[in-house]
Every structure is written in structure tokens, then in C-alpha cells.
View 1 (cartoon, one colour):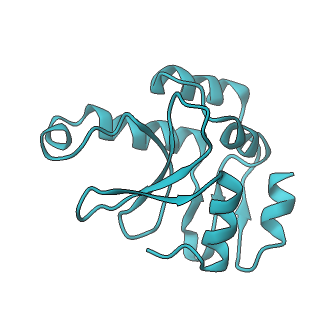
View 2 (cartoon, rainbow, N blue to C red):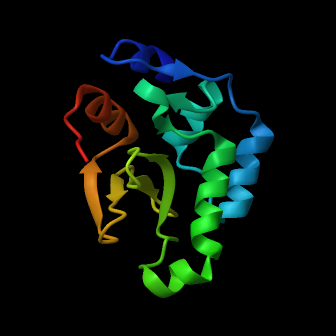
Length: 141
């Protein structure tokens, strides 16, 4: 379902082989919450999706763990920025901004974390709308 929906949108998308269940379980263990259902479903179809110029439209399960863990464990980040725990980052805008889903809540909203001012701003009501908005240019950073 996800790969078909992404393939028809404008722009270039590159799909990876599906994520192993072990990778998704590792995400849940390391991050302290299961991945949101939509993100897990997408990763089961393609373990990461790249947009034009190699942009990380959706990170792989492994990169999701790595990027989130780095932000949560870095003591310098903790001293400088708001907590990273409320969001599960799953993609980047290519300029340092990060896209994330709320953790532990059953809300599918997507937020962007601005790397310059550490603000977190709502950008889409769901992963599907994020995907569509990012690929069609309605979401801009």
C-alpha cells in the first residue's frame, strides 16, 4: 500500500527492501515505544525511502534508532535543546530539520524540529499527508 502510494506522487523515490521484524522490534526496545503503526507498516514494505538527490524521505529502521538515540544520549544536546523524547524522528529535510511523530500517543500527527531555533511545528495530520505534502512541495523547509 505505502510503496504504491509513494510511487504515483511526483518526484523521484527509491525504495529499499522491506525491514526485518527484528529491526522493528529493536526500534521499539531502544526507543522505549513501538513505532507508530503507519511508520512500521511503511518500513515493512520498504526499509527506508529516498527522495530526489538522496534525501531521506523515510529513514530505515536502523537509521531511525541511530538518529533518535544520538539525540537522546548526547549530554550537550540535553543542555542546549528541549527534550527529544516526545518525538520519534523518522526523516530529515536535508537542511538539518527533522520530521517526527509523537511517541506513546495514538495521534498520527507529524512535526518538524527546526535545527536553528529548536522549535517543533506541526506540519501534517498523518504520515500519509506528510509524504504527499513533502513530495508535492506543499511542505517546505
